[in-house]
Image 1 (tube, one colour):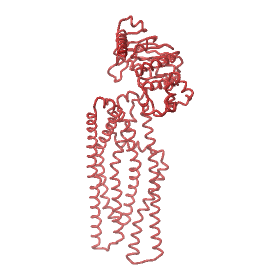
Image 2 (tube, one colour):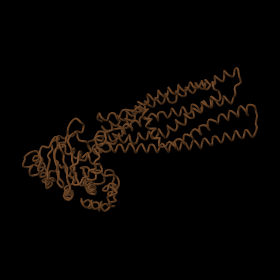
Image 3 (spheres, helix red, strand yellow):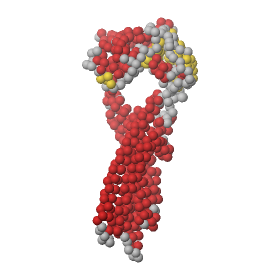
Image 4 (cartoon, one colour):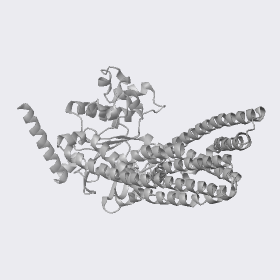
Length: 600
């Protein structure tokens, strides 16, 4: 990952992250209030239980007073409290989790929308697996924050407050002594947060690396097996996995030390303190057994929520680290170029002009240098040159995938930046060398869920590019299923479908990025015939490695290291005896050699 993306790996401060997460809960404040009230009610009902038992022991059992009516009221009240507590706790837990799921649903939509708005320069450098990890794994960790942590924290904090209120009701002096426990517990929490945040950040980053390597390996499995790279890939995967394991192991050791043993030690000390207090008090004054029972009971109940909070601190830390990674991505400002100005120009004829355009991907090395040309409506401009000469960069700038460094691109007399994205995408049809097909069926891949394109338009577009000949032979025709990336179709069939997809929009500008490079000779003949019809009345820019396919182009630009070194039509360029002629003769010789080999 290059330097400008390194900040995406830097953890955010937990304060702002928590505040931002809390802002997602604001739209649900009414239901949160109801859930909180139910939580307080259920907690209060649970806390009153030991007081009722204390009353039974001290007022009825010890003096052996067994009035039936008061005992029935006391027993009925105790049962009613537990039933009420169970109902209220169930309802509040359900509400908290329902709200949590809605919040995570909104968070995932927000981050996915942000990713869709990022420029291609971001995707050129950031690994796909890392993005998937942030959208799925990290948001899943945040979900646990709302589902199992926040509700538990709120419930147990309310419970702890109630416990201290009950303790002060029973014995204010001893309750004050027990307040010493709070600073000790808070200190343990702070120590845990300080060290665990570092380990969980390492774990999250290593998990992203694992996903990135896994995604790369699966997509490149053909190359891995072809060049027998299984051992190397396995070794590298093991190294990343070992880093993830080490970070996880460190966090487990920290959990084992601070989450349970430390709290258990404090709870034992607290119990010793309470028993010592009552033991000393009993030397001078009688001890009420009910008060002793209630106090020990509350002390036990005090450490139960503390243990629950401590156990969920690890989930809290993971969630905060994950949320920071999500928000880092959401705040990333490497957006795709957008419309500038208030004008609303329309593309009518599709005339294109580049004026002294210079461009660099990394801001250091220019891949295009002072490029100027003009293509009139209905004309075809061909771009040729060796790999890395800048052909695809011209296409990327015309499609406004990247912003230019200097110069100007004009369509129909208006600056490219003044057009709305919808206007550009609707009127510029792009056919790439390696077309991408989505999971679905043939019809949906041609229509791409555009409601303005009817089934008749789909069939007409397919017939126009001669794709209907193979579609009609499929078992389900236009409803035939398409697997991931169209893997069940040949490269030529995928290319024909991408042609049909482009023509279904009826664009005014046609951009062909080596569109015939992956098809066989027979299919290429069909496509060339289709291209002749497609180009009529449309401005066309074509990148071609096979120079024989662009003989009829109105104008040809020969690029070398980002500069236009030759230009003219096919015959004019051959007469110049330059780079174009050398490329043409080399290809012609290779084609003749291939024909001889076929005959042999």
